[in-house]
Image (cartoon, rainbow, N blue to C red; front, side):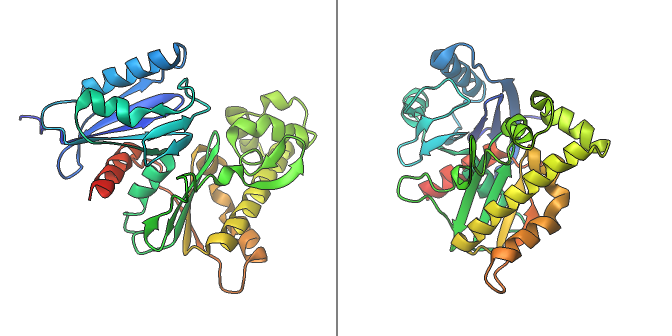
Length: 298
């Protein structure tokens, strides 16, 4: 049976992997490929890898390319302003580079916005017009839908919830620093736990399985601080629901919804507590990048 033609290409760029997917007209996956992100050979090596990956999908039938990237994005110009986990330097104009090479429309946006574009169309969420997404993983990212539209703010930087200051402790000031996987050793150290360098994801998971008191203390700290962040966001946005996901959330905090709901309710106006909903673990961010491309073209 002949493989369907590729109409759109979606690319999910991450600090550890890049996933490219080819989609047909109805956004069904035709083909896909995942590679480990080349962070060793600077911007040149990264772009060479990205071009090579897209080249493998590109054909005459392609109408557009959507790219989702981590970091700070000027979505209007398609510029990756800054990405801490990528060797791209500052102000990389991905949109211009890709459009010049492939001669089709290209959209570059934040990976969490691409995630939200897909997640918000699922049966459990499409009824909501005011929705937040919080992804707690290596870092913490966020996105907001306000009155049915993705909210970008003045510069397109809205949704950087991880940078919200929730404390003034030494190096643990922001929501991301107090909840994310990258900062687990620092959080453990702040709690006075021994050998904080060991408190990384796998070790943390093993200790939780043993009901180790130190691991339970660390888990409570993550829960309490995420609860503070959610309470603040609820007061600012008054959303109908908050979607929660990311590797740290799914592995360690998804069983803490009641504690998170209590934290939100404790600081909310009467009757203004949102639903907390687990994100799908296999959401295609690459598909979301294509959806954003199509929405902006419309």
